[in-house]
Amino acid sequence: MSHEDEIELVQLILKQIEARPIVGEIIEAAYAVGYDRLSDGITLMHELSFRGMKMKHPIGVGHDLLYALGTKSPWLPKTATSDTAARRWADTWFRTGMRDFGHWFRAPVWWTGLRLGAWHGWNCHRRHGNPTPELLQAVIFEWRRARILDEFVTK
Image 1: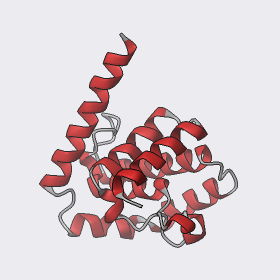
Image 2: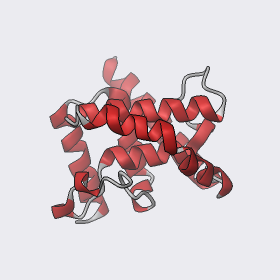
Image 3: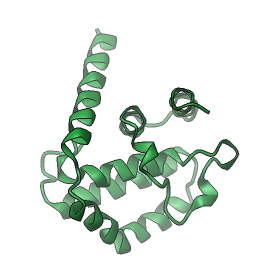
Image 4: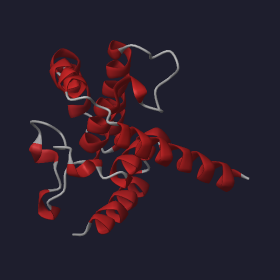
């Protein structure tokens, strides 16, 4: 499946499950900037991947993007200025997205695991210089594009 086909499939899935706007927007941005190529999907839960299509779970891709962006994420509330607050917000977004995808039982369990142990992944992103200027620029572009489209559609 080509990257463009994968993006179309993800958009179709998001529409089908009626994902919350913030969930869909972050996942769509992650695929638009090509972060799906860098993400491992949902770490340690490969049974949730779309194996038949050789595709990572979109929630994992979006969450990995949020971890890479850290405190620079344009979706963070203005009060989330520390690494701890940004990570808490990203993990809560993950739980919300898991619910949108129908994983009601797994959502709180996996959220607890993230809160307990994913600080290591968060710190790895910081040590590797994330977000890179290129990634941040691409994400900001996609974030602004989504805002303009939303404004255009609502008028």
